[in-house]
Image (cartoon, rainbow over all chains, first blue to last red; front, side, top):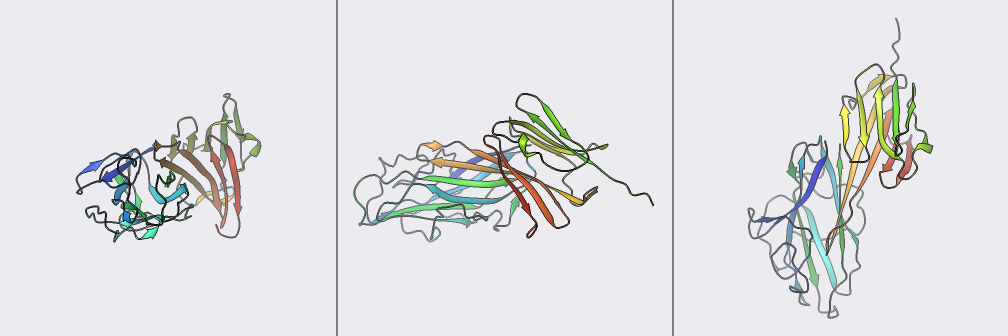
Length: 160
Length: 133
């Protein structure tokens, strides 16, 4: 009677998936990438990271999914944008995302900001996934050289 | 006409195995909920098989028919509130420790009373909301 949670990352196409242990952003299209190996050059964007929250095992209902950056300050010139309501897949890009256009929340948003079945009020009553979440980091030329601060992302969901 | 009264019983199993019960009324004894003290919490409908329970040692919970809205009882129409909120965190190195918070209590006559409990922390908050149930 307990749901099992896992991340599912989507790579070059909608069937090329991985099970990531982190959501690191960088200059290559890969799960669990090493930022030091694939840094984001000043003045450019990271690859978009497309992923979902997947739920399996036995539960009655999953809903109210919320996602935010809970720790890790930006350095000058750094930003992370996102969306949590994308229903159709498109190949990740290093151009400025046309999907991840909102700055990711830095505190618990209080209400659902990740959709299920195309609706923030959506829910799962059997094994399944949220809609796509997409993250993209950008670093302007105003940023200093070197690594940015580590970030912590938090996802919260209700299970009844 | 005979008015039928239905009763509910809270049963709390503490970490040391001690079982504490409240009979005939739906209320909470906050002294039970000290950090790390809870092993299991059970709300049972007396003289009926319906119940819901949560096992804090493994996160399992069970709802045997008691989640229907508007259960008539000694406190009026009583709607159990039972919610498990899961918090998953990840950073550059991988998954961080996850947290679970349980919200449990009841709504009746437009009023709400819930407890917010974490297995690791114990009682976090008691919420009595008479304005916005």
